[in-house]
Amino acid sequence: MTGVSALTGRLLRSTLRDDLPFAVIAPVGFFVVFNLALRAVIDTGPMSYAQYLLPVVIIQVAFLGALTTVDRAAQDQRSGWGLRLRTLPIPALAPLAARMLYCLVRGAVAMLAAIGAGYLFGFRMAGGPRDTATFVVLVLLFTLAISLGADAIGTRLAATAIAEEGTASQLLLVPQIVLAMVSTGFAPLAAFPQWLHPFVRYQPVSPLTETLRALTTGRPDTPDLALTLAWCLGLLVVFGTVAVRMQRRAG
Amino acid sequence: MIELDGVAKTFTGQVRALDGVSFSVPGGTVCAVLGHNGAGKTTTVRVLSTLVRPTSGRARVAGYDVVTQAADVRSNIGTTGQLAALDGQLTGRENLVLFGRLRGLPREAARRRADTLVDQFDMAHAADRRVANYSVGMQRRIDIAAALVVTPKVLFLDEPTTGLDPRSRRMVWDTVLSLSAEGVTVLLTTQYLEEADVLSDSIVVIDHGRVIASGTAEDLKRRAGYDYCTVSPVNPADLPAVLAALAGIEGAESDADANTVSVPAPDGVGTLSEVFRRIDALGIELADIGLRKPSLDEAFLHLTGDSAR
Image (cartoon, rainbow over all chains, first blue to last red; front, side, top):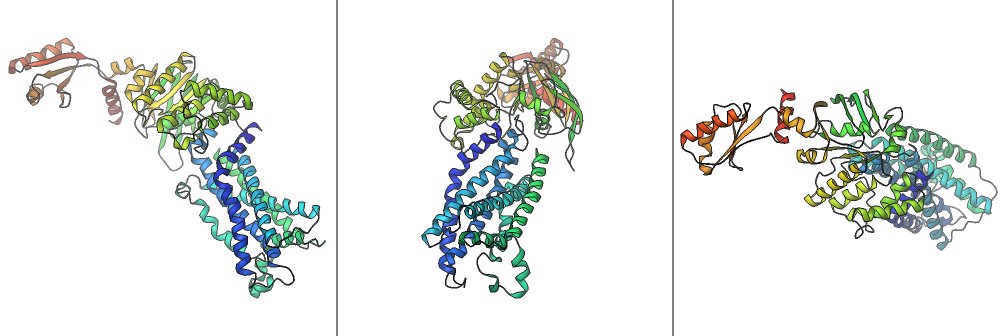
């Protein structure tokens, strides 16, 4: 445990210093820009676009945060620092655990920044304490799941030329943009062509943002909660298994 | 304290990095592993520090098997690699505290230990700056200090002085010698023969993944065969004539920079008088003539040359 807490402390100290501005500016920037650009274009019925938009901004930023994990995991694997780490009497999974704790802290900061910006534009957390708690837990679950996936990729790629250039994370830019854009996070299902509906409806970002949104409205029904949980827990188990395996193999 | 028995390592799809390496290092001594780039020095250190699993053979460090008892090995060793193994975004002191914590020291003890090391390594002026802004020499010093937060039984130093200025190199040497005096077993790799000569109680020469020679520096020099007879003419212009006079003796070489011609002297004084007779016959005035032991450089070239043949 000392190992995990020392390594997490190290990331908070050394990485968050550089990471924090991005973790705050990205959600605020995304929210402000998308809100201004799209609120007149996208019809979200009686709900304000700020209210509609906020969940997907949080998810988008969670994706971007996960991307930085790719490079961090690769770095921990290939640098002199990472080599020495593996000669220390600490559990093999301690570095992974520390990186994940760091991702959760970073994700929480980004979520708070997005909500803060949302409040300036009329977004409200109108659900009760239980809804709000569920909202936070879902965001962190999803952040953890995709961070594990990103970490596994970074660890796997550590020995390749891509990681050497420090551009491993860019590999994941495209899928992450597709998932966020082609979801009901930015626009309701009706805005997409019919043939895309099955993908839009069931890919993870749509049910997740639908659920998060429902949790902010104070309405009791969250029709997508089961699908959302299935996605979050499923990704968590799959990516978690792969990440642990990659870390063990690398160690 | 360190034992290798037929250690081999083949990386997937590549040549054998290590091909049956065996040697041992007694406790409290300094062993230098000498070899060219790619000879297998770093792989040897990585096997011993549990980073690389040997394909075959066995290795023990501080009494523990590096494969089956890796955790016990890790508790007893300190390592520094060729890359500075530090977090550049943290200060030198923060790095030392971090490594203390990772070695299981409580927070307060880790802090005290870091302060001690900062003083010991003469780093007080820079300890609170980010490591990324350090010179190479200062990084190396903190790097070695980080391997000592808990005094290890065995310390591995992979090319600890590569790229250092003479003063920093001297500091690293002093550190190694004082650790050895405290009873720490040190295994270091180096390409510098002088370094191996100055620091180590024993030398292992590795080439193409094999041990081609081992022993003390004296042993290796003796193993290189014979003494050398070296002559130096008063007038450097006579150097080619001296070389020509000695051309009949196998292995004659001239060194224009040093203004000398050297020939192997298997007969010792007999060879020396033969050399003197030949040059004296030409009437060339000599500034110096003498017998000397081969330098470790010559011994090394001789040994690796043999293995290549």
